[in-house]
Length: 427
Image 1: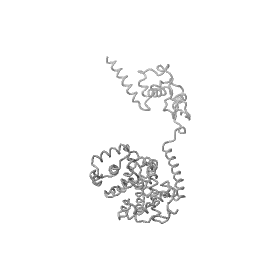
Image 2: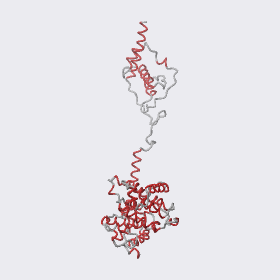
Image 3: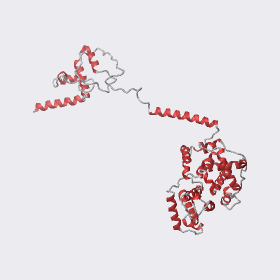
Image 4: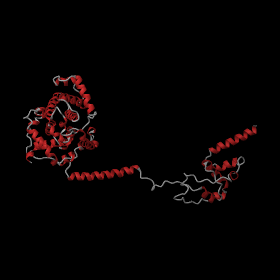
């Protein structure tokens, strides 16, 4: 038992030491354990030759090294790569003679493309991602430079360059936003002859209602966009729903309530709207009409109005406060007029800016920059602009004077008192 334990201990110890073998100790180890282990030649005669390890691309094959040394040891199974390598080293140490160990080993050239190893060819590899990005960026810069050169030739101004540091201006998306508004504005338009479907109201009653709502809007000090959305909701509702004459004012009040809920931070209470309507309606009637309107319009309150385009077109015109107020005066005159429904919101906004510029300068003024950002030429605006001039001339003479009185105050810069550009009518 003692001898068996000693032998077992010796075998276990040698295997442990074999796993921790250091470089240069192969000869000493073989001399010490040669009596306890069989020769490699008796262990490996029938084993199948293994392929070189795929990671040994830059090294010389063992067959070439051992051929120089004089004898090729039997191959080692590939499924034990670590043991094979270690066993090959021990076999080489055992077969080398003293006089052969002193001979330098001839260098064997490493093949450029080994057949048994998979090498990643740089030429066959895809172009790195950063290179693709750099090339795409350079192409984009060249394209932008060409566009800028074209813009310089046409004297176009970059109206968003001053807002690049302002995140609220969304300079990166502003162009796409207004392209979308231009495509979507038709969804907020109504047939210009929809009053023919109404049996109890007419276009004159519509004008009286909107003229009154302009004063209500001014009295409540609401936001500008609220008024434009109110008029849009009224026209879209009346275009699909027949309303009795006595309910027309209720439609206007309810439309303003919906617009306030959409645009305003602080919404007027229903009681205030009832009071300003001279208590003609009850709270229940307002709420019932509100349900009817939102269901008829399918809850679609997000439509581009003339106000949306006015902000952009005024910026393209490099406007000041006087030009801005006069442009809004022109547009609000058009809100009251039923015949202006034939023009899309973007055309109304562009024509208002053009007419206001002509009024202040005394001659036709429409720059290349304004034409570029509005997508309307001077000729396309002339019909609408001439109608605005006529409305301006008759603003203080008829019964519908709400817009005239509003823009005759100091708050709005006495814009209504400016001279209309009558020379546009002569042209």
